[in-house]
Length: 133
Ligand code: ZN
Image (cartoon, rainbow, N blue to C red; front, side, top):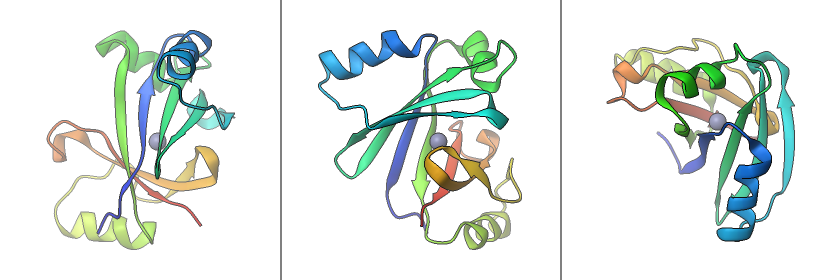
């Protein structure tokens, strides 16, 4: 059902500082940034091979990324798997008994269609299903 790791979402407190590490120490290239207002997050895209690292900084103190860092600290927040058809993938997950956070696709950074699965259904990992056209 899932095709590949689309990206890894990493929650950071300070995007500029984290970018220094990813660019200067790891040698990745920044391909762009985007603010996703609905999710109160600023995203930086760092392609690596056929996949991507996405650094996530909260734009508001009450945003989901800020809350995540408060609870768990900085680190890997979610893993996104590429699917061909997000509606079908959501239906299939539900059919297989996976609890979905998003029953309908929503807008994801970079113009993707995304839906999150509940970590209680996925061995503790926040899984994002991600379709790109
Ligand atoms: Zn993501």
